[in-house]
Image (cartoon, rainbow, N blue to C red; front, side, top):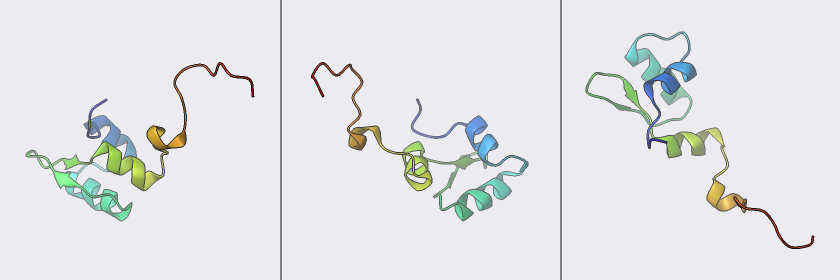
Length: 72
């Protein structure tokens, strides 16, 4: 997974918007900090997006990736 949202992911979030400036305006209204790529497209950090959108961080949820071998 890349550290930034892909162009396709940004397009899904900004469905219906075509111009890069319109996408950036919309993303900032969501509370996201957007930079511009050299081609003018929005650049959004994935971790920042997850924090703003309320996606729980796996490192802090206590979730484990393996089986629980103890008796509960």
